Length: 76
Image (cartoon, rainbow, N blue to C red; front, side, top):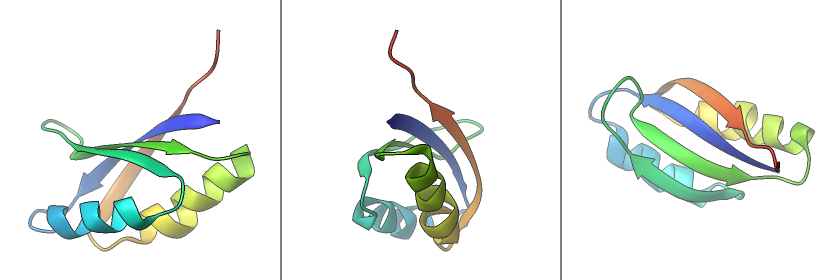
């Protein structure tokens, strides 16, 4: 299962957050962006439960991360 996770990061903590994002198992790509969101992560997990756990237990716990939105992909 693949998803994109949009992240809002507190100003000044972007570099440290990106470093920590990259250390989370299942995070395959990290992009810093401009706009309403500060980073877009490409993530992979075997199940929706593992995806949920990665986001709630790991990504949201990274200092500076103030909000996330997850976009789960589907194969058509």
